[in-house]
Amino acid sequence: MRANKKTCANCLRPVHGSPGGRGRGRDIAWHAHCPPCAQLVADQMETVLSIERPRGTPLQVRRCRWCGAERTCPAGWATRCHLCLDERTSPEIDLVRLAASSGFRAPLREAAQLAAVTTLVDVLAQFEQPGWTVIAGDVLGLPWTDDQYTAKSHGTWGRHDACGRIQVMSRGRDECATCPPEPRSRTHRARAEDAYLLYLVRYGDFVKFGRGYHSRVRDHLRSGATPVQVLTARHADVHVAELALKRRHVRDVARGIEGVPTSFGTGTEVLPIRLSPDLLDFLPHGEDVTHRFVPLR
Image 1 (cartoon, rainbow, N blue to C red):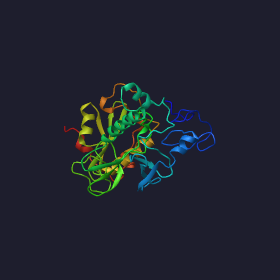
Image 2 (image 1 turned 45 degrees about the vertical axis):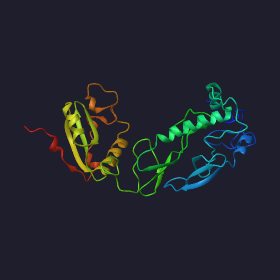
Image 3 (image 1 turned 180 degrees about the vertical axis):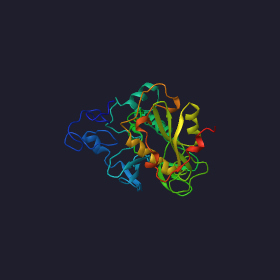
């Protein structure tokens, strides 16, 4: 990747020292800049919307004064337009080289910006869903390359049309954190009051704990496991209890064992029988329903 901490992302000239120092400008849009390139886009973006977040600094939507495109960025961070190149942009930048080899008749800079537009539109389209309006995103790599480094991003944000709330979006089906859960929603919030199970089953010299509905326990029993302890409680409480179980036994799990049912998975909740936990220690208000899973004789 050319745009590393030792090279200016825009002109590809070497930089040295800490961001903001004499030999290196402020890092912008996740990438290092030399002082002249950083100064060139210092006032390129203007804030048009500020979004308060429960944790962290406010998230801002900033608009490019050159072309009008918008990008998300936390307050205090520096960013630049997804699309606009400038007179200091190196002809060796990936999008410029792509444009040069693609046969576009337009000038190289315009052709490269067209490629950036295509990438941005494609990425934002992946977040579109009924009942929501996508506002802006943060695509790491633009405007220099369409190779997205998805490990880092300030996220794509959208407005829930029904209530106007703005929140970060996913590529799946989003649920507004303010409005009541939608019918048939499978989120933890929607299922918080569902009756759920925390279970412990045995197979040979091992036990497996976990959570789920009745069908999950039955899967283990059909594979030859026997019920040890099954508690029922609110979905939210069972979820918390299982996380506490995992933390307690994080160093005890028996990974890579052979001969246990495939329903036991990769072994992240499998313990030697001598370490069998009492589920009531983790879910004290749970109702014991083990009898539901004991075969009739």
